[in-house]
Length: 104
Image (tube, helix red, strand yellow):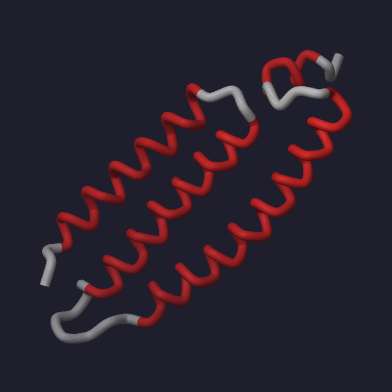
């Protein structure tokens, strides 16, 4: 059995990569991908910690949270991609800084 520290380290690396995408990238699609990476890190934490709660048992609550998070994340991504497609069709750009300037 793989130690829980490996899962938590992987989750931390995914979290750092997702935060990097949100902090540095300007393209709307890359921001959406960064949000999905953050969600994957949280799901990995839920599943890893539910499996290591009690020796020999797996708590189904962590898996339930992960499944619900995946479903809600899919809905959020669908809406975000729809907004991105409409923004590109209307303004011919996906640069969030440029779209922010168009607000005024």
